Amino acid sequence: MQEITKHFVVCHVDAPGQQVGASQFPQGYQFPSMEQLAAMLPSVVQHFGFKYVIGIGVGAGAYVLAKFGLIFPDLVEGLVLMNIDPNGKGWIDWAATKLSGLTSTLPDTVLSHLFSQEELANNTELVQSYRQQIGNVVNQANLQLFWNMYNSRRDLDINRPGTVPNAKTLRCPVMLVVGDNAPAEDGVVECNSKLDPGTTTFLKMADSGGLPQVTQPGKLTEAFKYFLQGMGYIAYLKDRRLSGGAVPSASMTRLARSRTASLTSASSVDGSRPQACTHSESSEGLGQVNHTMEVSC
Image (cartoon, rainbow, N blue to C red; front, side, top):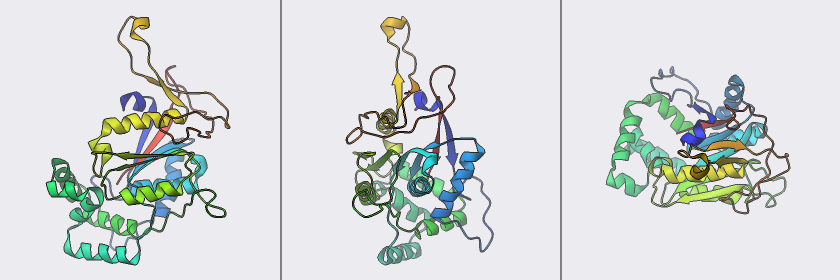
């Protein structure tokens, strides 16, 4: 990711009380709903002076960023949503979650949300690492509040344009990502069916399990580069034969074009993406700087 991150500002946002070393919330604390978490993000954007962001979210973070994109479309230039579930929990799901909470520890419950059954059965080093991290690094009482609120979420309330009157959907380019046999696979597939196919890229990654950003970072990075190209950012590499030296890292350059123009993306369905023009500052003459927000769970 270096050729991308060195030209972008990366801002990581933790949900309240989920950061390392967080103090336990007082008794009776009301954890924010997913909608309220989304409504908090503009203050982060304004604090750093960002005009808009490219959001990268995983799981609950993906749901929050999707809400953010629906409520504040002018602040979002693009979204990468991994393992998103656009549906609220029904009564059967709610009962199953309650039963699971009675028979399993919180770390095991969260692990079943992150990893496929095969990964859990094999108890890979990655699963063990996450079990240790969830059980020992994050405050358990705070995590329980976050988990309960995520499982109380409502439907994302999006529909593909033209399928229902006054359909609401994400206006920005979106890349949906899920691993094969991941717990979130059905939810991501359904989310894809509700978004505009002209601005949505759906990436189902083989041999990646529940967390493709961890197990297949190289492939996901390549897809992210294509996604950025589709939004008007493109990597230029100097030719070794022309420069006479080693090939330098690619610089991300924003293509200047009008609000109504579009650029074909190698990973898009039909390649056409309407895109707003940018007003970012340049970075040492190498390209334009924009901003990335990451919300993980």
